Image 1 (cartoon, rainbow, N blue to C red):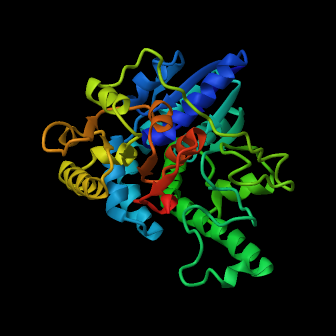
Image 2 (cartoon, rainbow, N blue to C red):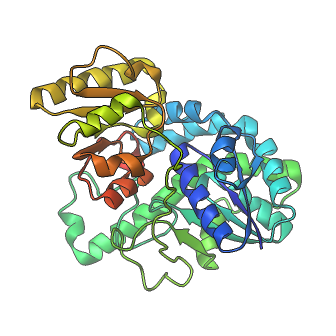
Length: 361
């Protein structure tokens, strides 16, 4: 089969889809990943075909989401203006990528793939790496979590199940209301029939039980027997590091010279604002010094690398694969992104989460 995976967002959104694509390739399928241009190297470096899709700069997107903070209602006003200039071109890019495909696998931010599959009459499968778009009664939406001040109330089985279900419906509405104006404009421009204004394609997905792959472990979130037939829990989609990768010499010396250090990083978001990253690095270094612990400070920004750190603390700018690093540290302090949480669980290392966005709380 020829399969196209449509995905977008930060590296944490795209990397699991690359791992999923590799799994399908190993099963004998021909796989193309359609995504934003900055991810070409990540995709092609793993031997998958790549098709570019118009979209905003991933760093600018993350910066906007950080500005919105942990208030999901601010997402629409922050997120929509970034996507609007790229919506029509991005759809046509996805359409071109999917034209000769037998199936499409789409993620929430790669949703143009769903629309392209609709136009072309191709089988489509959704994919998520955190509890989004699933309408579970077993746990609340990752975006809303438990109600502030009402945790005791939702412990009651009936009330808790109702709250959990409603939290997923609420997040569906937030997501759909964010993209619905863009989708509505696009449908008019390209001659597609309008989508429902209430739940849009998300409601249809559930009514028709369209398949959705849940990319996490059943030991972290239990399977739902009622939904398993069309929402299977597959396990995490891990992308192991390139075996030719070598750690910086200073990091290697630190790891080889004493007890395991504490690692601290905030994933793709560390490259957004150099001043903020520098402040985080300074505060973290001071905390580790007072605790008498050695540490590794990770960042996508060069401001964290170099001089000024106490002895026993190393700053590393650039990529350090978590599947290589986490088995070598005592504690992983991170932002709580789904992929980072999965990597810490896989390594068996304790986590301390500092959430920056609603789905990380």
